[in-house]
Image 1 (cartoon, rainbow, N blue to C red):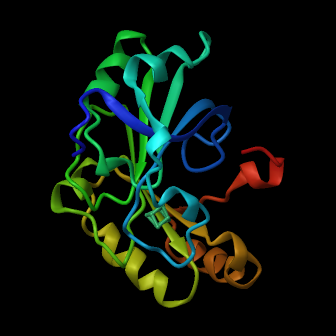
Image 2 (cartoon, rainbow, N blue to C red):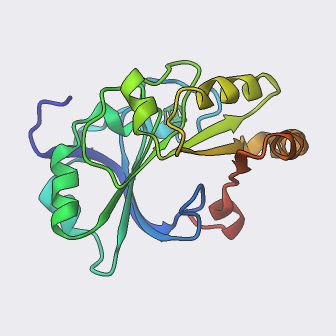
Length: 202
Ligand code: SF4
């Protein structure tokens, strides 16, 4: 947890369409928090790993930038749970905005979430309590042994948790046929693709 009370480091914030998972297609305001020390080789936001001094913003300021018609905020990173998020969630709830998070689950959970997307990473596994909080489990598939990781991960979430396999964007041509065959054999899983990249939006 950071010692700057009621401030969070914002890498970027923007209003777009959620491209992945159950809420794919939903207009959503994304808040990307800086800092991550998980170090995934396939990370497509490596610039989020470090915090720059000028990124710190008060929660009031962050909220003031959210357009009036926004119903859903997605907090992502970086690894958003490297920060204490109770105050941000309280402020969103006050404005009747749904609070979603996308996390590796490898840090102590904070905040009160309407939707908790857990994307476990082999390099730094989720904490026990994060598995139980997940509303959807999203496992990135880069190579064949990731299917085993996905199946092991699915044993740790609750029975209502939605299960998604998502191809690593740069490997999608190679792995998509494997994912399709896997999901046909294991229909408790669904495929999530990064539709925002096809729509050419952030
Ligand atoms: Fe990148 Fe997310 Fe992995 Fe962090 S957890 S290195 S932000 S993909």
